[in-house]
Image (cartoon, rainbow over all chains, first blue to last red; front, top):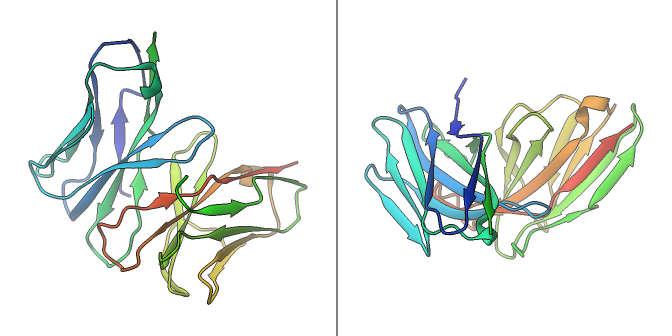
Length: 114
Length: 115
């Protein structure tokens, strides 16, 4: 059974704080790691797809790093804003077959207080 | 708006009944995925179709089935419903190729309540 773990489960920060959270995934048979942002009452929205060890991706104030050898990825948010409040999901894609099956973590729920 | 549409938005039904959830992928996407989000679980992959053919299967119950039609829309059929089937069901699409790096775009979901 493949496990994708995210920590912490939830996080409360003040506006302007920088924050980061972790996604752990199997280090064998890795193909890609996806990050999604999921706001309440909306659908998950794609942030990044990461494939290479050492990869770093950035979108505005949000960035992510990837370590496939040890099986983890960090998501960073610089200068959090209330509109960043959402659940952040990571999803692991194994490389054993040509399918798009993603295994999701439980998510980290971020609340940013003004 | 991701471009993926799902109907209905909400569905309330009784145990033992059968329902059909519908999904239309983004224009040009050939892959459709179904996921289930229960209260105490993360997003669980159910099944993937690519251009009308089943491509991958997750922990989908035998009471559940899906298909993708020639116009690429997909339906998820849930039968002999149980209380535990109450969940948010998402459809996602990607493509047009089968590239494993393809981002999956999620629809708004169908919330199923079984009473």
